[in-house]
Length: 483
Image: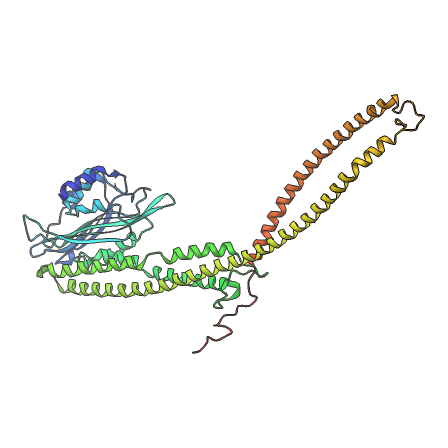
């Protein structure tokens, strides 16, 4: 089953090219033959390295000298292809990858883990059916992440240890953002301890859990104190380090953005994930101690084993401290975010109340103007007909005297001849005036929009104003209420 799934997954993988090196550390009973090498590995020499042929053939030893242990790695450090850690992607041809896994007895399941998320560690013991003495512990240790600036990031490690020869064979790949280069350099300095298969995984774990992780949490807590000073006015930093300008305004946008960024920094390298890794490595150490042959359990290996166990206990306690520290920081960030939202909501409610008051005053003024216009319209409707009729009949075209003949003058047409054109002229003038007024209204509307934008800016400035002129908290001025 494993063989079929391995071939099936390899056939579906995309293939990219990376620069390949090899690392070979061999320890003999005579230190004169000890070797520690790292050199580029071309593909025409790839099979020779896997099967220890040609330039990689074991040296001829004098009588009584034997191989104690060693490490042989295919190394791809500083992998540069942008898709090198994309799921279902390998850095060799399919034939070369299968040849490497089979020759070095690496775990077939590693090809199924190209898309695992977060740090991942797996350790199991295979059983050779042909020779039960060739019990082979298999190790997969990897961590890959999504793209950053167009490139995938991460590292991976596949190992297999042969108890009969004491040689650990493996494949290591990492991008420049990983600690693979430093880990390999660390490994070469520990060449005498190469007989333990967990040496390289614990070296990589040590670099991944370096003091940078603790410093990230400390920096985030320092950042949190600045945010607390800005939002809840907690007096734990110097005033010039905060977000409040000299004119007493807060950079609300900067505070909101920094709250999000600080939260993401706190969540960097969750300790719970690494606690699980530490437990799995510790379980692997227990299995190794149970299964290692007595002839290979030398005092040096035993001492290294006990050192690894103690180191894992140290990391476990360290991660527990980070977890507690992180939980406190996250809770305080949540409090500050809630306080900031409440502060902005109160300010917004106050501004809306002020705007509602202004709108109400405008509505009352408009109502008074409307009432006045209605009154004028009513008076015009009452008196205009009578005034018009009085004006018409008082003209000389009408004579209502007893001896008048005729009563209506024949020159009445003169009135209409003058009135109608004059009316048309006045109405036309009004239309022209109204259109000009509409264009003026459009200009005024644009000015009104600008005034609204200025008003919005003023409102935001008012919302940024500090609610209190002095930082008064129970830690600085008053004392907590005692029971």
